[in-house]
Every structure is written in C-alpha cells, then in structure tokens.
Image (tube, rainbow, N blue to C red; front, side, top):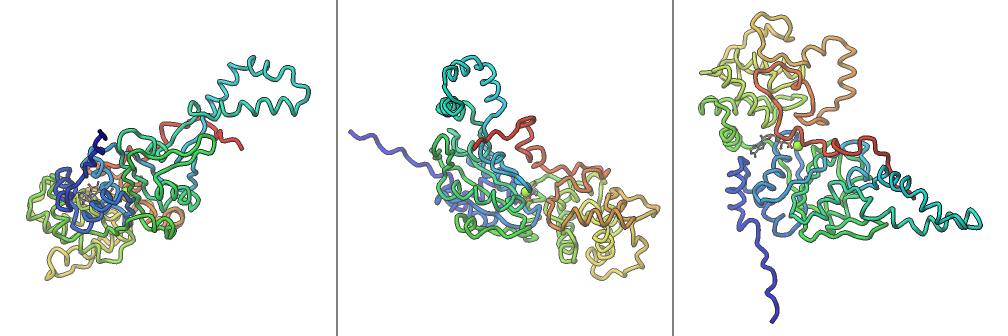
Length: 400
Ligand SMILES: Nc1ncnc2c1ncn2[C@@H]1O[C@H](COP(=O)(O)OP(=O)(O)O)[C@@H](O)[C@H]1O
Ligand SMILES: [Mg+2]
C-alpha cells in the first residue's frame, strides 16, 4: 500500500485568519496586506514590501514568523555588502589551522614529486577536502535554504545593498536554491517564506520584482493607526490618542524632510502618557515634538503648525521658538538635530551623510542620544546586524 502523501497544512485558512492571528501578535494588518501574506503562504512566493521607514515592514516579517511558528532568519542589507556575508564563505581560519596541523601529511604527499608542477597538481587533487561541508560557513541565505526547521527569511532594506547582491538573490527567490560551485546546489526542503523590504532609496531590478509578490505599505489610515497605538499599551487615554493620531497625520501633510512614522506616533503617545497629559495642548505638543520630528527645519515647521492641528480655529501667535534654542520652558526632548545645525559645517556634513529617506527611523539618528524620558529603541534594534557575531578576524577565504 502506498503511504499517504504528507498532508500539507496551510498556515492560514483565509485572509481573515491572517488578520486575526497577526492581531494576536500585536500587528494590525489591513485586508490588502493580509491578502498579500495569505497569497505568499499559498503560492510560496517571496513578498517585497516597499514604503517609507517605520510603517511596519520589518515588523510584518517578524510577526509572520511568530504567527506561523517559524524561525526568523534575517539578512540586514548594507552598502558594499558582498555575497560572502549573505550566502556563505569558506572558513579560512579553519582551513589554515588544518593545513598547519597536517603539514607533515601534506609534505609526504608532495615529497617525491619530480617537479613543482607535479607537486601543485597533487595538492590540487586534494582541494575538495578543504572545500567541503566541514569548512563551509553558511550565512543567512544559505542557512534559510538548508534549515530543517521551516523559516521566515527577512531580507531587510534590500535597497541599501548593491545591485550585485540583488543579482545573487535571484536564484534563491526564483528557485529556493543556492549553488555552491564546490559542493553543488542546495534546495530547500520546506521553502522559506521570504520577505524583502525596501525603503525605496533606489529602484530595484525588474528581475527581482518579477519574482516577488509586491506590496506598497504606506502610512495607515487614522483608524488603523489608532488601533496600532492601542495595541501598544502606551498608557495614553483613548481620546487623547485619537487626537494625537490626527495631529501626526497633519504633520505628515507638511512638507517635512522626514515625516513621522507609526513608531514615532507610538513614542509620542508614550511620552505624553509619562508626562501625565490629561489634555493635548499646543504647548505640550511643541515641548515634546522632537520625539516625532528629528530635523531642525522640521521642528520649526511642526511647531508652527501645531496650534492649527490641535484646534483649527486657533489664533497663531508669533512663533517665539523659531529655532528651538534658549527658550525658558524646557523642552522635554531636545533633539540633536537642533543642536548640531548651528554651524554651516555640521549641517553640510550631515546633509552629505544623510540623504533623506536613507536612514530608517531607528538608525542611530538623533533619537539615540536624545534625553527623552521614554526610550525610543525599536524592537528591531539589536537583531539588525546579523553579521556582528561572526567573521571578526576572518579574511575572505574564497579561492579561485
Ligand atoms: N501594522 C502595525 N501593527 C502594529 N505595529 C506596527 C504596525 N506598523 C508599524 N508598527 C510599529 O511601528 C514600528 C516600526 O515598524 P518597522 O517594521 O520597524 O518599520 P519599517 O521596517 O517599515 O521601517 C514597529 O516596531 C511597530 O511597533
Ligand atoms: Mg525596517
């Protein structure tokens, strides 16, 4: 008798189930996004999420892992990253150690070789020993393919990587496989759920897009944003949270260099709750506005707009804090951007380093040194740099 085919247990029974199971893990997905996730799990296609920083792209991958009980593997992309940090490399240190220890044995091998050429040929014949499984150091992409446990593979901020790395991804995305010339091709037994994110700092290749289900994540509707704030237990009263969400949306309509994202709304709600806010006034919001806008000019624009955002009928007083310096009522959070913008040099350097949109909201920007009463460290920090733990003194060992 033939054994019954292994039953494929679908992760989600329906789009609605995606929504409810994501909500159980604190992620509020709308129908469109939930449909994309549902299709991903059914069609086993990678998902490419594009959109501004802080709208929940990374969080979606983390939540997908939680909701499906899969392990999360993460490749954080960066400029200049090469495939040895993404796919695999040869453990050069280990190869060297082995050759040292086996010096004598290797010596015997070539001892009676008549010519140098013959000696080289004999060593070459042993190459496969050193380019074998034992010396392979897999990185996240190969790990994902070889994992026995089903995984969610997050390829985060792929737009930061160079196009060459993007090309390396194609085999994995299209065929769920990775080729190691010396060893052969590894194919995933359980295809990983792959989530790629991009902050749109450059266009991705058509080849990559073609292999993915594509979803654009934008700032949420007021309703959904309020729901998100609610799930975060910020401590801010419901009516104030509702008002705050409206204000943040108003700020997004201003022409700011960096619009406040969802995480900033959450931070602001927490800040106001810590301060015991019982009502939102233009002054209170101005005093704490650097929690949500991080550039000097943005702060001035926001402070100017706040009275109208809080109360459309407000009389706008002459803005006394055009530049955020030296006013007596004590900003709760003084953004570094305000401080270092004073000299033209600092500004020029920062502008040069810091193309708009290039950095995520949690990218070690001003917040990290801002004495806010609330820590604005996002949950994604800490796990960002997958490469931190390894390759400390390792040299690229790929030969030939
Ligand atoms: N739909 C959502 N449901 C719950 N929280 C969300 C949602 N979208 C964003 N957030 C919150 O915003 C934060 C920033 O999201 P993140 O995924 O890091 O943004 P991105 O990767 O798009 O830059 C998350 O840590 C989470 O707290
Ligand atoms: Mg992210």
